[in-house]
Image 1 (cartoon, rainbow, N blue to C red):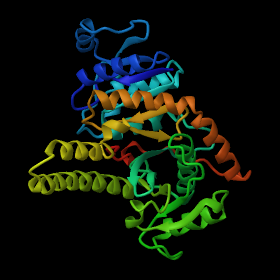
Image 2 (spheres, one colour):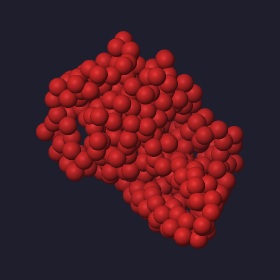
Image 3 (cartoon, rainbow, N blue to C red):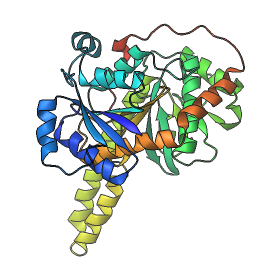
Length: 353
């Protein structure tokens, strides 16, 4: 598999992206990585490293989209940014995937500009996995499309089911709709319409209905569906709460321990890894004809390496082919008018967990 890595994206780029790429190549002998960025900054980092030059190459990109820049303006003013160049490589089929820890809004917006969508997909969505009392659940969308329609949410459910089944290993994923109450009448018009669509869809047998926020971590569903604004808020609150609880627990527990302090610290570190985005690598932008992994802006080299490996996993398990197949069945042969191109400013910055 050949992957374009936005070498300039992220708080600590390009040092961590270069190191992450090399780590991933060591772990996967079938992977090739194209570092997209400024050669004058990349080549000194590569000069002292040991790697297979036949599997790690550099493609020049003149600009970088800053983390605080507005996606639409940045992409217009910087057509040769590392993010834009990486997407063009995938659109030309020179690579199979794009991985970036850069400005998430720009990553999504650049993808939307290519219109490189899977057949039948009307809007891509960012999916993240979250720990629950019953394993791990998929939350989609967490920022790609805050102006969703009910049919988009139905497609997110289909994509989430395939991802949960093929990547997380959930044999028969249960689907829930994030809402303010479990009753059929709850939510605004968007969520009421989506609820009705899901009840009448090919997912009806695995649809468990509306799920309140507190049900997410109870594991009441394996796939949680929402529009990007709600999903992004849930993601950010979850990250903040996880960090708070781990720190509070560590302080309270360690304060009471006089013995076996090292064992307690090891246990806390093990628990914290469940919530560490570095272990997951990144979040896939599902619905793209190719693979796109979006990483946290503060990703370290481990997170980058894991994101590259996650991209390879998505391709090897033929997630896209199964999404197209499932969407074809869900459409039931009904033709619908295509959505107009999404404005780039709609893509909110998501921080995958």
